[in-house]
Amino acid sequence: MSAVPVTEQERIPRVLVVDDEPNIRELVQVALKFHGCSVSAAASGAEALRQAEAARPDLIVLDVVLPDIDGFEVCRRLRASGNEVPVIFLTARDTSSDTVTGLALGGDDYVTKPFSVEALVARVRAVLRRASRSARADAAGDDGALRVADLELDEARWTVRRAGVPVELSPTEFRLLACLMRSQGRVLTRAQLLESVWGWDYAGESQIVETYVSYLRRKLDPLGPPLIHTQRGVGYSLRPPPERAPEHPGG
Image (cartoon, rainbow, N blue to C red):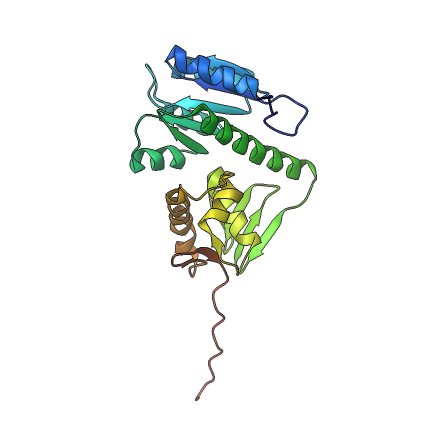
């Protein structure tokens, strides 16, 4: 099998692999190097934070269970410092609460141990492609302004406002909202949203879509009428609220 570059970019993507188990670190390093990445490694949360700051990787594969600071705390500190590097969590805990915790902290994806190397490489490729597309869109200078009713999303400035009120979104929430706004009025299936937002080409993880839709509703609905609607058994759509008929006095 010949090596396939992870992205179409000429620049080699830099990946930091963080795991306290040497055999897993080596396995992941070898696989990612084979697929065209430059790979560095860390065995602790503190070392991961140091390398993330010093080397500025394009993506971090981050084990949740580490000997000092757990992976969730590493991600929390990265996001608090303004570092939005994509993070894929490695976790032995296959529970929905851990999944939700990792994604809510700003993680981009997760892989459950034991995992297949091919599955992990596929996730890495998908996240790097998505990040590459975002970077190219920024470089193109497109103003990226989307508007639906009183909701405004500016992809160039990475801002969202509803009724003039700024709304703070995580990177994944932002991408999901942009996807729904670009297709306003159309019902997007969970599989379409997984492919567009997460880069996955299968619908086996639709719980993630539902989780993030609930996050968006929690942040947007207090500011006005609901905009995101569920088509039961199919998916979701974003559309403006129906216009109220004018009231006629005496009628």
